[in-house]
Image (cartoon, rainbow, N blue to C red; front, side):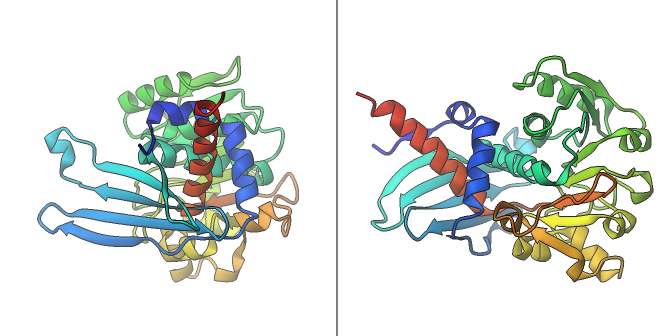
Length: 321
């Protein structure tokens, strides 16, 4: 029987230090990750099917299958369902099935933390989490695994949701002594933060360049469609911009697409992608006063990397004599 790795098993198998190290290696490898396929399943319900294939020439292949059904909350069902299927590239034999949501949450947060290891200042002590959705606690924990964060501040449009997100952050595996606070004034919170991680579905800028002080690193995780945006043009113009992949962000990232269309950002101002940082083709941050931005929309390379790591650990444990 093909094994199925649950969300709980993935949480155990993918601690952030291990996953970040694996991603660092994966972005130096040769992997093929075509543009994702999008198919409409139901015009009436606006339900779509996403297919995200990825493979290694000598290794494994995989595909993440995602369904998005906006009408599900009214039926008391999750909006997104996801599963990842892992295969042997050469034989095509199936190896395992994995919970797609947990896999996506962990690899997304780990990719942001990996970028931060090159782009934020080593002495960063304060983290601002903007957004109160599923990713908030994952991003907080991942960033804390690469920088000596002492204070995490949470801001959301709803005080109630902010408090709930803060409670979920405190349930993560955080270093001892970290304080988690709620921000009521976004501008003041941005001005005080060493690292800002933003994961929302906003279609208008939330983080403004005039608020961001010198030396800050801004991690933009939302804005994964051309009509979505989290940062204004002033921030994009003043920052040194890095991306997870050039192809993905230039096709999907509203923060870049809209800033380029308005003339606030030149396409050649985007400095490097994660593969360049991992392969040491670019060193990342150049000085302590530089403002850096990491813009991600996700890539199937991260899915395959995380799946390989989790399944290898699972097989090592279950096949042990």
